[in-house]
Amino acid sequence: MRNTTRRAVLGAGIATAGSGLLAACSKDGGSSAAPSDAAPAGYVSPDGPEVAAAEARRRPGPVREVRLTATAAALDLGAGRTVRSWAYGDALPGKEIRVTAGDTLALTLANHLPEPTSVHWHGLALRNDMDGVPGLTQPAVRAGASRQYRFAVAHPGTYWLHPHAGTQQDRGLYAPLIVEDPKEPLAYDKEWVVVLDDWVDGVDGSTPDAVLAELSRGMGGMDHGGGTGHGGGMDHGGGHGMTHTSASSKGAAARQASTASPSPAGPPRMLMGATSDVLGGDAGDVAYPHYLVNGRVPEDPQTFTARPGDRVRIRLINAGGDTAFRVALGDHRMTVTHTDGFPVEHVQTDALLLGMGERYDVLVEVKDGVFPLTALAEGKKRSALAVLRTGGGTAPGADVRPRELEGTPLTAAALKADRAVALADRRPDRTVTLRLSGSMAKYDWAINGRKYAPAQRYPVGAGERVRLVFVNDTDMWHPMHLHGHTFALPGGGPRKDTAIVLPGKRLEADFDADNPGLWMIHCHNVYHAEAGMMTVLGYRG
Image (cartoon, helix red, strand yellow):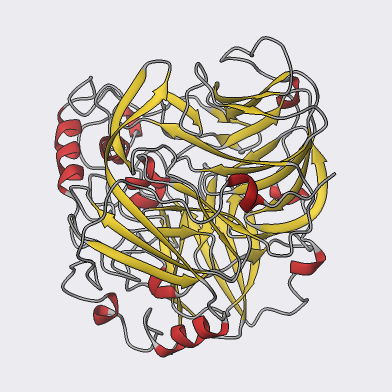
């Protein structure tokens, strides 16, 4: 078995996404004030000397330059379905970016969208002023402007990028970011990157902003008529600290507020009756018309090819807005090697579950024939599909359900961190308790009873071992994501940056405060986050 070099297999250098770039590149994307101007005193600023010192310790290496264009695009989902959306260039997902750990990534974003945007590097421990949260770590990149993101990439693994501005991530604005290990210990013949998504934008007039407007009215008594208390209406903290709700959000809210019937903002998308024992009950809020693997509907799937006996590394990324996916490869078992970029003790499974924002790497020794790679939308009775072909045979149908999906899927709770990345035993210096609150009735999702406000911080100190205690007081599950760090799950569990917290349950996670700045913690359900389930950890200055 040979250890194939991924850079040779997938092409040398860095992929360039998008068709053009504005000639001018302003330092701040054209905003009038830096985020630190309004920051409460006593906290490390995102562009402060502590951040610069931490970046220097990462020893930035060779520079990999990338140009990325966020633009309106017509996207072909397959089977004759074309939608108008926003994307990175004209591809869905956006073109893969691939670097090596130790490199410096220098990416210039050109914003050809009609509203401000940003780029967040999901899962990376990077310098704080490059984290891509408008109003907290950077000004938003204005429509027609551009910005360079430049930072050292310290850790190998499977990551991805997306905006952190309103509901933009639930359009086509996402792309894989693969950081290769210069000392890769795994041996495999092929590598596939598989991005899972739930899709609504541009279908029958729907937009994510319109979906948020519908959900924000709540479902108490099925009264879709006006506000719903402190979580209702459009007062949802949208834009992640931007100073106003975007014009598109306002327009969607006005259209949806008038009627629940089909309109220029699309038909109703609130999901009723989706349940999952694995997720503890309610599976999600949104009835998506399509579920995708690498931008393709199951009626016209992507086909991966290999030879019988090949050992294949599959990097799975859940880029969805509101959907957990249960993934299986028909007639195969998968060996889980990594989650959220970090290695784990190898475990075999028939199927695994990915919440929004989670990533898993698996190894599979492929058999002879044609097999479905199915991503079941957990609790929603629909699925996404890709096909593995190593020989002759008829391709599976769009609604195929491999028997491997029938059992209980593997989750992070079944994994142990690889010894090389396990956190050393240490008592926590600080405990931060985050109570998750809210309901579908009022759509008033929050943390510790407070909707997101950039100035609300939970202090931590550099060098501390911090214990996060997530207490889910709601009837729904929440994939909670920490920016700029990875935490360890209890009992020698895996290193993660995104973890599912089940309804009525408590989850403890420890991390070392070794990356100064202001860092978001939020639910990675796009709509829960925009309703207010976000907050900030701030390093004390």
